[in-house]
Image (tube, rainbow, N blue to C red; front, side, top):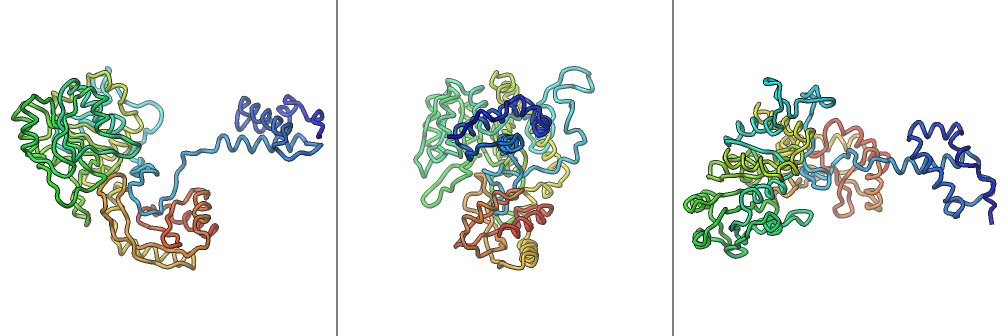
Length: 444
């Protein structure tokens, strides 16, 4: 049994030069905790047992603990998977913020500079959104789930809300439309079947009095085969004939026509407004290409009522996300949407991607350039792919290699297919290429 009475005291270790250096980097409270935990581990035999531990050795062990405790887990990664809106990697990559000189310090978040008095944070994005979409008013909250919940709570509590069984969707994280309706206090009325709903189904449900029709766009799955749904315009006509609202949970937030890039047409925000929707809810971090946000646009009277509801404050967007969102919307206004990373990746040609893949192969001196498919991802355009060119590397123990790539600085995320590691240039930024190649060369 080791004699631990010779171990130095905590106070002595804190005064040691190495201890002072740790305090300077990590602060006294955290350093104190690490020293105590290290000494406890030595006494418990969790660290290699030896008779004579020097002060430097003990502090080196404490330093390892401190590095582990403070190592950032939310960190930039290189996405070489080819999934553009990768849910696990933050969905839409953030747009360049160099346009904004003020990204720290104070800002005019809720201050009217012209009047010199309190303003509203919703004004900043609202004026951009109304000009882009033609809506009378707009409100931004922290995500689209919150947007739908807020709309239903503020306008449909204790009222009947019609939704087709074809649209009782669940998205990532177990978010289910029926549960949101229940949480809002609205009374859900299901109509139709799992594959078909007809205008007559809506007409029949309207006979008992309805507050709203909710259309939930099935953006993360497809209805194929023996299916049918009325158009949004038909739904709007039925709702308004009976004095009800039409609320469109559009989800993906496309402001550009995806068909022009060889993809299926994703319903656009502007189309929902033209079709007669009273309110449209959509995400900021999907096809819009911005930060996580829930955007509500529509009639001014309804938006005003929603803004005044107590829940609106609980789910409001924070200033940093709002700043990024306004920057993204500014790109759309200036007809520069293809400079937004999401659209830049979607619109990138296969020939350009092939040149990048060939350059990577030449730099590494190994691998094969093969045809493949990129996906949009993020619960948008299900089943739709874009042709791409991949760098494929034959690697023994491919799973182990992927693990090492994830441990790289910065982490590199790739995918495996038939025992080959595949790297898709579509989702790798040009400024990331050098670090990608160095990481791959070092590890593989």
